[in-house]
Length: 342
Ligand SMILES: [Zn+2]
Ligand SMILES: [Zn+2]
Image (cartoon, rainbow, N blue to C red; front, side):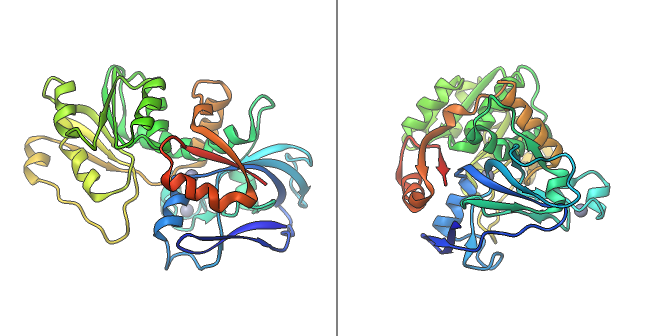
C-alpha cells in the first residue's frame, strides 16, 4: 500500500509499504480522508519530536475510513462500517487513569499513520476510542473530531462562562476551533489575533467580534481597549511559542484565566510575574491532548451541527501530493486544513 513516511525536516515521501495485518481485537480500515493538523505541520517544519519518534515514521493522525477487516473477538464493528478512531487510548491502569485524568496516562497508546491507504487500529483503541461516523457526515468532518476533542478538553479546564470575554491568540485551525467552541459556550465577546489578514477575515465570518492583526497592532493594548482596560476574562494561546504564552499573561483581567494551549518547543521556558499571580490572582492552565469521552463529545457536536467544522477544510488533495500540501500550509494565507484523499 501507499503511505507517507517522514524522513526528516521537510523530507516527506510517499512509499510502497506492507499492508498491515490485523490480530484479534483489531480492525483494518481503508482510509477515505485524513486531515492535516498543526502538529503535523510543526513536525514537518521543525522536527520538534526528533529524539522522541524514530525516523522514518508514518505520519498523520486525523482520519475517517471504511472497515475492510474485523479481527477475532470484535463484536460491535462490522466490515463496511464508516468509522473514525482517536489517535490515543489510555491504559486505565496507571494512577492518572484511575484518577480519571486519562489525557495524562503514563502508558498512553498512540496511533499514527493516517496518511496511508490503510490503517490498523489496535485493540485498545478499538475498545476505547473508535466510533461509527453518522451517514450525513463526510470523512473529513469526522476526522476533525481529534483536534476538536483537544479543544473541548482545554476549554472545559478554562471554565468559560456565559458572557465571558475570550481573547484567542492565533487564528489557525486550533484557534478557530476554540473560537467556534467558546461561541457555543456563550462567550459574550470574542477577540482574536493573528498576523494574517485572510485568517482574521475567516475568524470574523465564524463569529469573532474583534480582530487584531499582530503584525501592525499591539495585541495587548488592543485587547485592553476592547475590554475597557480590564483585560479578557479568559485568554487562550493557540500558537505554541513562549513569546505568545507570555503575551497571554498580559491580556487577562485580574482574577482571570490563561489557557496555554499551544505546545512550545522542548526546553523552552516563560517568565511569570509573582506580583501578577499574587495581587492579580491569575490562573494559568496548561492543556495536553484529550480523553476518549471528549472524542465522543466532539464527534457528537460535529454530527449535530452544533460545531460546523466544514469552513476549516479549505482544500482537498491526493495522498501523492502530500508534500505539496504541507508546503502550501507552510506558506498559504488562506488554507486552514487540507483533506488528504488516498
Ligand atoms: Zn491533530
Ligand atoms: Zn494510564
